[in-house]
Figure (cartoon, rainbow, N blue to C red):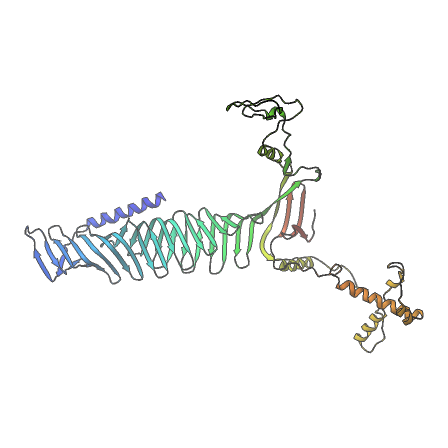
Length: 548
């Protein structure tokens, strides 16, 4: 940053020195509606005057013109025309023809083609076409608005430098920076300090980079960080295209998901926002953090709760006899009571008899005291490292995750059988295949009736005895009763069997390691051609020649 400011100052000094080397030209009064010479003949009072100095034309409602100093002061509706596209408006103007510097104050507006700069104080050089403000200003160009405390505008290159509290408001982005350069032709912003780019739900931080307000492409090359919800991406170089939803990171990449506890690293990564997919290549590896609570040797019944209740000890006579407490006892009937205001009767209590305390003290003593007991369960943490040529992580629905896992399983299977054995089908008599299947189903009989003692002996009513005089009729009746029992069980909600439908729309993170995948852990190592890990069941699957 210091180098940039030094070069900037040297550039200004060079421009000023070149301007001083040139011969100064006089400011000419071209036209006016009225001109009055002052008493001292030091200046002219000019009304509705028009001044010409080199390629700049200056107009105002009134002015004090100093021919000897080659300068003038203008008041009211001040306008500076330069070239065909640059116009400056203000209420007050002080112009010096020797230095070519115009000091404009009060409602200053600089219009350069489609860009408009507004401020209350502007110093403008008509020769170099360079303007400066230090009391706050705003630059508006169609959908882009830039606000800063200090600003520098170059009309030749249409570059504007902004310093301190810079805010760029675009169509779909908000940029906050410390130092920024904006070009009105290309509509590209350049950052030279800490910068935050806010795009809908995403945030990009960089300290040196660019942002194209038309294509909505951002590039950071120093201390970069991309945030999207619980996910962060860090790299030496970060590029993101908001319209296409594509990002790329180079060198020292760290992809971290605090919600899923995943840390993905590498030297080259591509990010696809629509698919929520990140592909890391070139020295890629991922770190999983696992936790295990050591509660195997602990008896849950004997283990104290987190908040244990301890009963308060019973109040003793010694604790009850405080200095400020007095004990009143009943005297014998025949014995008179001493009528003294300040006197109190104190009697000795039996040794084993406790003193009577107040109801408030008794209530406080009966209440249990809750004390905090530390949980002594030890949480063991371990890290799992997985590396491969390419690592891919993506957030999928549970349904898509199952389909993906099945495809990978089938991809690694090979049919090693020489010939599939064919068994002759049992032929069932029937006109067609449908009727044959129906006949086959009819032949299947229920054999549960053979378990006679399973439901107890069958008790027939008088009506049923009449309906089943022989064994064949009894058999039909028994089958009918079994069907009725099945129907009754199906209606009973206790015995009802419902299909368990898992939520296929739940979102889970999947990590896939392609080609020469390896796993390292404190007590485990594994090698395979490809490895997948899913947060839905924390299951690691190894495909094609796995070795554990």
